[in-house]
Image (cartoon, rainbow, N blue to C red; front, top):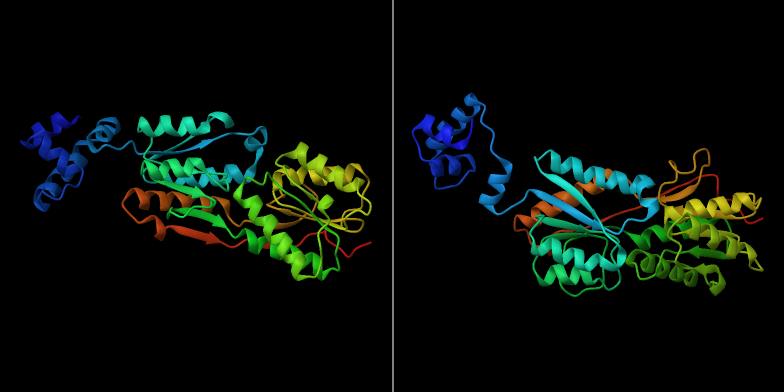
Length: 335
């Protein structure tokens, strides 16, 4: 049954029936209940495309993502997206991922926004100075940033506390007596990497220590670069006694480099990796700074995005979750 047939059955105009089905306030309660009852009895279901055109919404939300080869095997990324998808599906809405090359990212945002192909976006891997966020603010398009950026204007964001997570890792290593501590970082134009490095330097200074510049290696964002970064550290003299890896993608490569070099992890060199390693290094109990429940985090971002699309002020939608240290077998006292 279509809308016209339902209207004929009720002896009402299509406009009145449509407004009743969509909850317009000008339709009185008695009429609305009569229409809804008839729709249920007749098995009527609205045409989602027609409804979207009528209300000016697509009921689709999305993320434009410059996918790396490692992303498709990244359980944290997949769990976060899974939480977003499930939350929207519960509301009869959809979530899409728009893969894009890194050099074409801003152009893809402009195209999506101009065509109103989605009702809102999640902006991931936020940068120190993020032109994507600046553009979305300029055109007043609903978005939630998965991470923060340096910006004076208020915007909605969800993040984990990067400074707190690094402090957890540093306190754990310092309590075991480590002083020569190294840091493998993601590219430092990414806001999370910059915040974690700043936290690392601050913790070293508070402990009366000066980090060796050779022990701070940036641009490790996948297994290969993590492997190569750890190789560089192993060639240093003196070697660091402990290493923090600020992302789990390069953490896998860093761990593999230690194992391939015959290093006794937790004795010769200790290591802490930011992010869960359970699904990528089975059988190795890696000490981690964990971001709890990525699926719930994805759901939270969608709730925030829907609230924003419904008119909530962005400054009321800024959420900071706390990471936790998960002790493992890869930290011990310096050899």
